[in-house]
Image 1 (cartoon, rainbow, N blue to C red):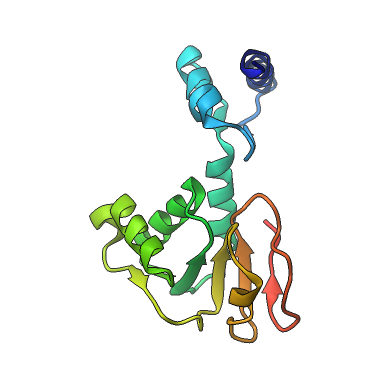
Image 2: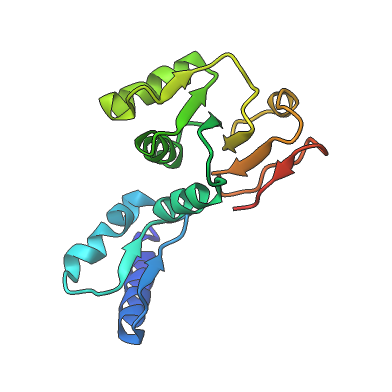
Length: 173
């Protein structure tokens, strides 16, 4: 029932951004894809737009990828398998970074989503020893306690991770 007023406000913001010469406009992580197909509705309606419209998921993926330290060759991906988690895994696999998944069912689901594009970089792992953890909703305190000292936790969910360790590092994205 609020879809049209919300879409109208978003459309207004896009046109104002275009008028002001803004280069990129993010619709935010809470933008619901079902309301406007992640911004595609506006891009089709105004094909001449110079402003790049990205949905919140694209922005979240970019922030997480840019938070990973240079030289990283392996990460642990843990949390609910969302569109953001899948996109992060896909991008990392394409970059040649090994993405470890500890839950067998989650590994299998992600393997189906990514297909052969993941190459050999999507791995079912029994280990929690990775120094970089990409975490979303669904990560438990017990799992955090399995991390090695000095592990860097980078969240891909919209809310920051509750810190359970004093000997690890927590990014806020």
